[in-house]
Image (cartoon, rainbow over all chains, first blue to last red; front, top):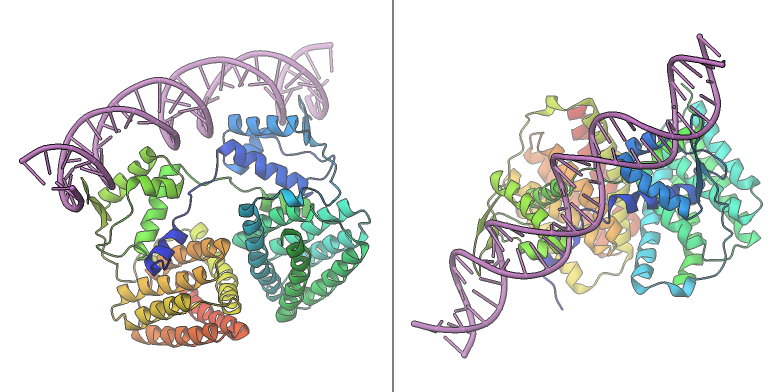
Length: 244
Length: 244
DNA sequence: GCCCAATGGTCTGAGTTCATACCAATTTTA
DNA sequence: TAAAATTGGTATGAACTCAGACCATTGGGC
């Protein structure tokens, strides 16, 4: 099958304009936000009206999504002033389960993710290192890094790791970079839940994070990218075995 | 205003689940596809039923979009077997107009694009060079490159350039990379229409393309990335003056 | 020349999403 | 303690989107 270049291009470019219904997208995005620990256990989500505005969705649609999250046990809701919706989901501990239950399509998507990640996250590190960071931003990065290093339990470590990578992305100041890294971390989180975590892995990862923070804070952009590439490669090596 | 790290993160992560209505998204995507020259003047679009399936949209919605394209003069439609929709839009010649009419928000988005592009396209070049390319793929890349070099008129050159960059992206085999580059080229095309084109710019660009193709075909991944970075930087320098 | 196939054009009823009110519960504040 | 403010809960009608069927037009195959 020798597809014409024309055909290859158009096939690649004409993609679905949107995946699923609005309320499903809301459920997915909110669930991801919670699972990644951006809203940790016990924290309050913004009010329905504000969330609806942020997600650019009607309140009715958002409420359907909230009902789903409530039913799934991720959040609880109380009424009245001072009320609202609170996260009740405890971070899950990674474990080797369901790894075999992945469809071929999903596996392809996962492998694609690893390639894409190796472009975007090192690129983000490079950009963040080149951009002059303010004091507040430097502290923000250090705090996110310390949170990862401090985390003992795998579940907490996993969430802190996501937050660290997202924090780095926000330091670039580029909405497109943030969106890409968010998307990457979301799927990556899903993958990492399917492999057991060794203390050695966590320690190795923390060393790379430390080197990364050093490079970014000292403005060594090329160095930051290389460290992040190695970090991605090491994680990818673990995961490729999983989806092999 | 010292936003807490929490707030910064959530603000960055909670993004609209989807921009606009389905039919607007279709119009935008199809118009972009046509303007980028993926469907050149005189070529036939796929049938309505196939397009609807590709864009994951009902035929009714797709037809609304087609009606808009027809009214805008981008395409013409005929009925019956052998009929269909044909591109009638002549590629536009870049010219310095409307550059001042851009809103501050748009300017910010454009500057963001240049940052994002400098990550994604060099990353794509790197990945394509690392991946072993088949003979058909090598020919595809060379053909796309020759088409750019051969183009004399600025309008044709612009379209061929977009196709070249998109072709390179498809060679990575990564759907996420293709999507990112498509999105980048779409906005970039819009920007480039607002600046006049000099023959010197075109010649310089062609030399960089040639070096890029050489590096990719010989598997020199690092070299390919560096060349692409320079290519992006040079274009960005032109454009930053525009939106300054 | 006739029939079939492929295409755009039209219609309909159901499901989703939306904006906009208004109601109910609860805390803060005067 | 009463009023105000903020939150979730509910209702309604319009607009959008969908799947599916059917019609109209045209060109190709027999």
